[in-house]
Length: 270
Image 1: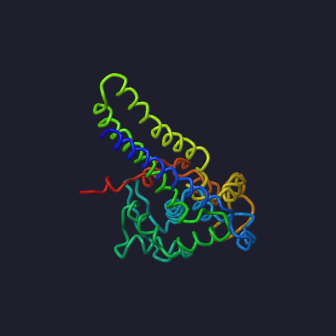
Image 2: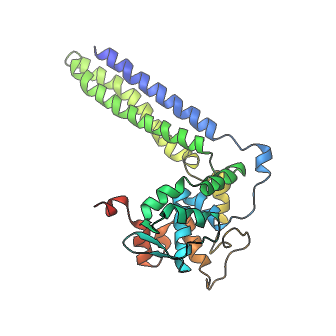
Image 3: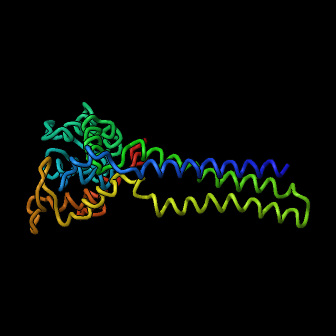
């Protein structure tokens, strides 16, 4: 009986590790030549935010931008309240729509709604076409493959816990444990290699996008414009917004802003 469980363990290891290898190979394919020719030399603020942190980071940058200009109130309790219902670009308009007709909504709900907005999908498509963002199917396949390998590890441990006591006492149980350790070693090694080698394909930015992000220093041009970095004084807040786009809310000096962006849905359940 324990041999049947061993076959189940080996099958799960081979199938899940094989899928992970196929997903990694597909994600590692370079962009089409025609698309790579459209690659920009610099990034807008929203582009940098998407490549560094995905749609949620784009939402945070839009919220803080509107908050700095007093067109939206960001409370430390994690609520966003619209003051001026007119957005300055498509992404701001979609944020206002995500907040809802009442003009007030928790930041986590705004992020969730804004992620599905047409403006965010357009940004994703444009960066993917330029070879700067990892295609959504590749991100999904990689994440699914990694989850399956982790599940296989758990299955192997579970089957080993049941099968080893079934083996003949003494050396038989030792041999059974040794046999089960091999598929466990295979799946664990796969996960370790994936963490090191294929991490770039599970993030939002492709290697080319990560290279552009790495060139950014203290600032980026404002909404929708390309150019050089902002000035050292950061009078217009470009440097602060750039830091938010690249490093997330931990880069914000204002504790109330950090608290507003750190709010979770659990904080707003009644």
